[in-house]
Length: 530
Image (cartoon, rainbow, N blue to C red; front, side, top):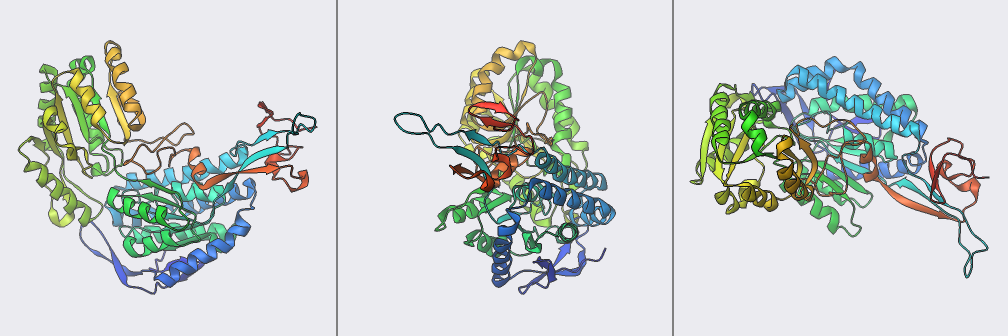
């Protein structure tokens, strides 16, 4: 499929009025044949203004209509799978299997939200019937539902060109809620982004939906991204990226004359705690499985394990010895961009220079011209770690810090010192449960997902999933960006009081025509109200 390098506004592919750039193959340094054009501020305003006008129509779409749109997008993506995979692998240096799997996940997210809409009870409707004879005051008829916020800006992620990008979870959940979406692409994969945006546009046209409910813009995060977040008609933001970039945009969002919610997934080091009996019995196996998790996507997963914490002793020494033995034979891998690779190497060099850190092992050296990075493992005494909290910060790439604790009490002290993370893992056997019971309450305050005997590099599409956590892992710890509850980020509650039945939304009507479960007078029921 041909790639134009244009931006998408109101169903039209138009040339961006600002500067141009080429896509790059990180593994070879080669530039794309196409030039991509960046939007200017006038085009930002046009896209948002049109999306706001389209919201009046799209916000009234039934769940069935929105479900059909999402399923049609999924079908259009599947129809061009070969083109997406070919371009995605070229722009990211990720293997074909990974891009294929991520496309499957993206399609799965769209269908998951379609299923949620078809079920119909996602708004959790609540009805408290009137009591006109109540004394001393009559009780009104009150009915609660959820309504969409308005146009949503979505920032594509560098490390997930599909699942957290143009048609990813933020876009899928916002459209499912009834919100138009303006995507600010990531410069690492503009061609892939255009192919995906084209699939969304074809689905919109097939379903007869307003074309302005989706727009795709290239441009600088600092300029175009800031302008999008500042725009008075934008009502929410979904972001996946760095702490620095996300925090800057968050500050813009909350300092507007009308502050808006900013749902940012920022940075996470995902600590892994190895308890005594588990470490004693499986030190070598843990080391090998850990390296496998760390090297997934060349360490460029937001849930990559960036810290191993254990108590010193013979089992700890076996763990470190296995890491030192196995890591050097791991091959280097191309990172997503030359800039990401340069940043990773800089941070590793800074850690190398710290006297409190000891290098455990490094992988095989890579080709700098191909943006290749190698694994880099460091260890630090827990006392030194506690004296330098900057060591908790994420090193985006295949590097981990092993923290050596004097005893269980110091391990708990390390845990209590940490900020927010997406995941935290505990390796424990039955004999470790007393220690785990002490550690778990500390972790619960600091992470979004607790794992036992596994790693966070694998985020299941499930209604029970939480992908978020306390700051800085995310900017809104009460929400998730994965799973069906992600839709709740882009809605708000609306209460109807003494409203005629004919004017109520379908989920609140007395007849309950869709037969959904509702909380009626504090009792769950799918029956009509007589």
